[in-house]
Image 1: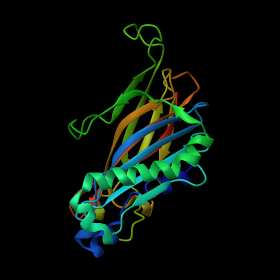
Image 2: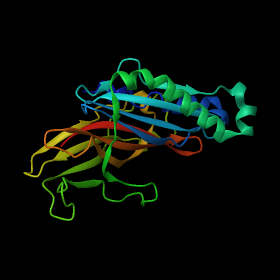
Image 3: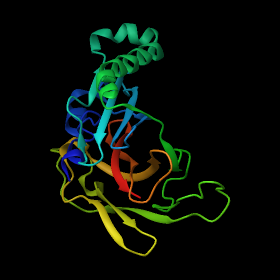
Image 4: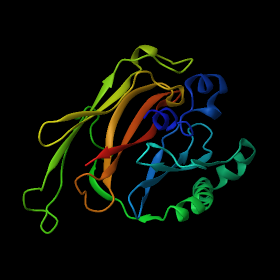
Length: 256
């Protein structure tokens, strides 16, 4: 499926051409992400992104709800909330209060969908990397299925995820340096050595802007990662912006 991945950063990414033409008030930003959780049947996954845009300092928040079985947005999502430039003075006076306001508004807007899908099951973190980890660390995650009674014992299974850059055509109309723009490939290797490509860009969608680096930030499951279940990989995307590299987030279903 490619529909979700073509649109996944659409509400987050500021296209490089728009950034270049709009001036400092439209500069890129660092996106924070926060997991909301899974549905009780583990079919749906929700997470939130938010931050203060660089340059303008205006707050934004988005709630994404994904159908893991179809790798697509749930109808009526994402929920997007931000503040216009007319609110600049108010935001500058209390930026984090403004950010808290848009985050609450986004969650309020998403509440009917979250309730209808019964999204209240906590996510279990199987793997995570913080932003303090040196960039360029091995783009491989070896993930074990821990012993359910004693995680200090040998795992009950394991798999590997490899995240690699790929050279593909760029969808954005303008990039500051198109030569450095790359797509990505995520490969799943089962314990028996079977390799499956979960995603490989054939072309970078315009909604992703001008990405130059990717990093596997987290792998999540709905409770214990049962064989045959589906979890989520959160992939950080670093893209060209007016003020350094922007950060956005891609979510991708991952089989266990």
